Length: 528
Image (cartoon, rainbow, N blue to C red; front, side):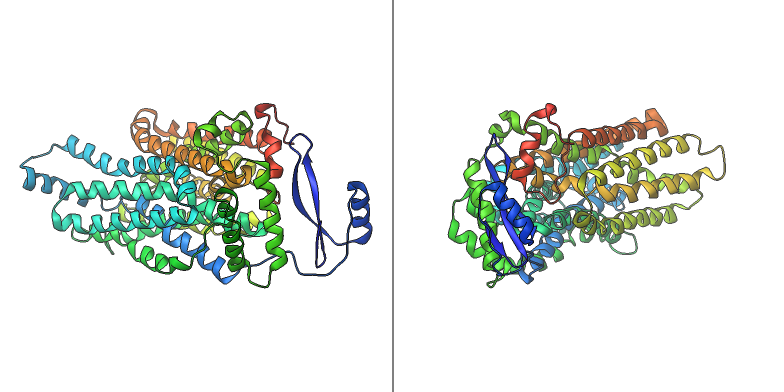
């Protein structure tokens, strides 16, 4: 037992089978403390020491915003920047190939080349995600963050100079490098931020990556507008402009801490872990640091220090949480958020807007997506995960079905185009309340440190793979199915709702060592 100011910390057993113990905070009440002490056959004390809730320290805040703006925002930026200047880039590619190789590429060949330029980013994301588990354990959480920054910087240099060098190959290589950086970011940055954050702020820090990616998409859309860099002469500036954020955010990286949990549990470096905790929590927070060290010691003793990807895949006790993480990540993409943005311009045109105004309206939808994402840190700190995810998925399913239905009959009544726009905005709003942010960090709350990097890597791989599927399959399917192409997205949301309802335990306010036994029996687990 550890006693702090107005808090009595008592070890409560979570399961007899695993004999795990976790730290819980109970408001100081002598009668309650005495009752628990007698029941658990332990002693208690009412000594006043210090508070139990660390807040936002300067270093913690700096790292949180640097990781978001320097790593997560460039991920979204590279997704959102390619749409508006596509015609100019394709024309340059055709001209470059003619001048360098005397090859006059056909229109179908040019479309295939452009699809490759776009898709190689997603391929890089999948590869970067798959390698994220090994990289996170070998180089550390901070090390992965630094590697992704280096890849982003090299990619931006490729984008900037590809026009000067008249090299399509540099453009493709740059897209591959930023894809690798993006996959590594989505696999490691949420893990890094949740591991350096105090217990009370882990949910808040867990959604920083999601907010950054969403914001990056909007920033990319803005800088690729025709009024800024989206022109025949300046598109390479649009592709590479994010390097400004990378430089600013990575310059002070020498003072960023490594994850204390990684140092303590994976590297078994107890002194460095305590030193990093002291920097993050403050030199006068000795009791808070001792509490976190105790939690890490329990987790370190309970599980092996590292888990390979293969061992995680073979472990039956990790099957259900791994399915949840991969389903949430993949379902986030298969729920159709990118397809909505593909289709929104044409829908806005059907509502009577000009092409230019439809593009601005599409940007407005992106801004709504970003504005709503700012609610996520507040919601994650105050609202439980299960009801929020269920609420988000079922409403997204309803709006997606409504979009399909209204879009199919859009010419039947004058008010239907406006109704379709309302449905799109409603879908975007409710998507960002749960389905958008929760998948990014749910793995850090379901898995303990040892298997966490492998689980996050698999989840990120599922996200990039499904993103690739949507990018390749949506255009031909929309030509065949028309408006009903949105029905599979609606069904995906329903399936995610059922998975959440029956198999996702509530993770808010619980240590992963407390959650893990609840899902250790696979689909026979009872989480309610």
